[in-house]
Image 1 (tube, rainbow, N blue to C red):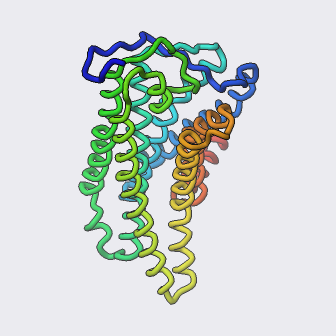
Image 2 (cartoon, rainbow, N blue to C red):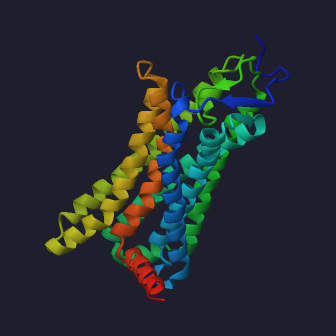
Length: 315
């Protein structure tokens, strides 16, 4: 068995299988997946356009929402086009370099999305618990720095995954039993000891996601403590309504990601096609659901959407 330090040997391309056992139904399965991707692109572009064009929305909360929408666009686009090409045109081959690039974007923007959720939780905490200091604590320059830190963190965490993959040697088997280049599925084809990658992946996931989830939860615990001290029922309901949309998108993102991780790692009793479908939904459902939730729950964005729709229809 070759070592990681020896000259790496990898195939020029891998073969994606799509959804194993359901190849004959690929065209039908692709229809809801394509619909979700169209809604994702359309919905997030609307959110970005409205926030960009309406100067009244140039505030920290909406800057963070813009980061989330942009992240969702990249994350879903990293997986969906190739997946749909596979389903529609049987385009199963993916070049090694493209596989590494796809893997980088999947990991990088998953961590970025987690970081954006934490920043949005902190924004809600400051807005509700320290409303008079909100514009000082979370000024525009501070939001820009937070965004840069989240981006840099995602990039630096994800680079080692790609480095390990490039340095590993692979066996003659080039078939990936998924519709995209997931790190765990690709490294199953390696002919070397992947312990270092396994340890790094587990450590990073535990520390980064654990950190984000812990402080997001703490933010909302503090928010709830303050909200239930409000004497006015209307103020209490308004504050809870403001946070409910954020809590919904966080739960969808983390529950799907956790379920996918557990089924892929420990769910050997689950059919492989079920695991693949759930993994695909992890990159389609949250990016599709996020703009819908924020358009429905955020009055300023909802009113802008209705205004533009009514204006265009009256022409």
